[in-house]
Picture 1 (cartoon, rainbow, N blue to C red):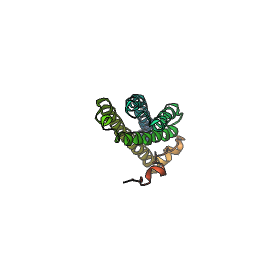
Picture 2 (picture 1 turned 135 degrees about the horizontal axis):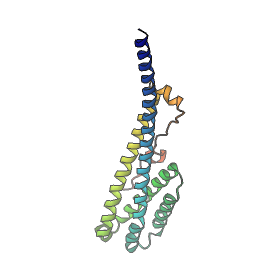
Picture 3 (picture 1 turned 135 degrees about the vertical axis):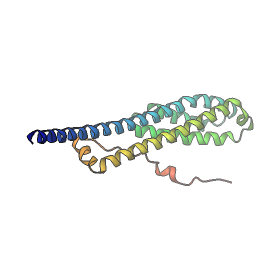
Picture 4 (picture 1 turned 180 degrees about the vertical axis):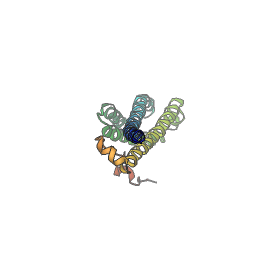
Length: 185
């Protein structure tokens, strides 16, 4: 009888240890997934920034008097490359995206530029990168949501607090990006 009691106690202790290990590892995996998705966003933002000088060079040949937009694109790119943290990178990336949008709008006025093979290739590459950035942001937010759910449900909430884990912030669209753009006809 005592042997069975000792076996039961040992099994219960083993189960408790396994549960502690499981939740610790679960939070580590979720946090690593979030860090990885931030790194993927960073990679895509860098790729976009690296394509910008080539795009500006192609456009400059056609639109020599459009210096203001070229300066805005160059400044947005340098802000992105020099950004220190994720929030700054996201903000600078949004500024670069807006400047590139204005650059592509100017290209509409230059039929030869729109037909230029280099311009079209760069435009397609940037479009593909924008899609990857959007996907990476979605993946990041999905990962943060999974961590939120794991940290707020029982018994996860107990282990999350016990291990001193910190919640992560969702990536949000700035208010200015939510506003309807003005369209001049």
